[in-house]
Length: 245
Image (cartoon, rainbow, N blue to C red):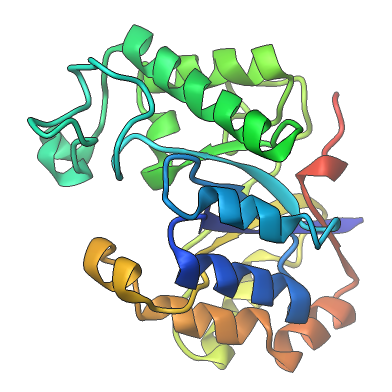
């Protein structure tokens, strides 16, 4: 059986991204998303998601964007108290104090639960910072404490089924379809990561990845992609369907 999770990162980053993700679920084949709890549109994003019970909502742990939820952390904040940008770390690897990181990411998960009234479906992170040395042990500890699956962690967390991550697709619809032909037609569970969204002022001024989100939206909602998934007998799921081993 071929199963696919189509997950949109950056839910709650801003209004444009949030509304784009909701539209891709409502009109397209998007099954899952992950929330940035420290972003200004986070609460509204969860309120909107309540109308779509089939949309899985996980947590997008943040270390390199916006402001932290906890105070006084030195290893990942700048002189203004904001998270350090990814490009300010050596080799763009945000490796930080694990104790400070645990407190911050724990606070982000707790805020998600407070806002949503339930746990997230799974864990991943902005810029994949949860996969860096040291950080991954913190993320795995939290995944175990909250009993959640986590992205790209087959070697660390093994009590849930593993969904290999696919990323890097771009271009016109024919290019996306070719990406699917090359990578998706396999047995088992896979996750396709995407970043759809409308471009608003916040996205334009704060993200280096803006215009391609429009093309991702077009593809995820396209009849061609829906037909390809149907023709290849791929079942769409989200992380709520991931089983314990």
